[in-house]
Image (cartoon, rainbow, N blue to C red):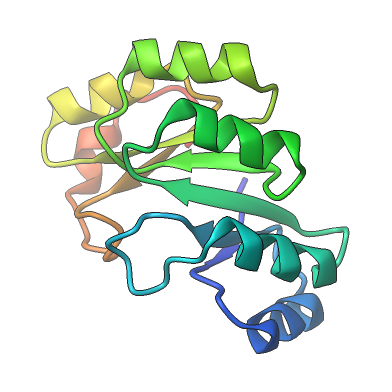
Amino acid sequence: MTRIKLCGLTRMEDIEAANRLLPGYVGFVFAKRSRRCVSPAQAAELKKRLDKRIKAAGVFVDEKISTIAELAEKGVIDIIQLHGSEDEEYISELRRRTDKPIIKAFVISSSDDAAKAERSGADYILLDGGRGEGTPFEWEVLDRIEREY
């Protein structure tokens, strides 16, 4: 199943556009190095205006688990998207701290990368050829993946 997420929303105009388009998800980026990074307070304000049919994903890169859990607990985010070096131990601990679904992003450059993604304990996997830039990769390396991605 294809899911659509508009990511990097930072302004109320972005929320208004999302509410008109009704994607499944929007993304609030909390990675401090991103030019689209929002503060927890900004994200909370944006989420208040978001249509209830749209889920808010928090996008994180090697963030403290306590920070993510707090945003989930406060209802600022509905789903967690990890884009850093978070390993299975990190995912397990995060799962103990929150019941929100977890997406783990993987950079795919070989069949070994695809196999690692398939073994992930995350609820969903996101496969990319780069670090969120939309870089393509050779789709053939996914031939043996049997889980939803």
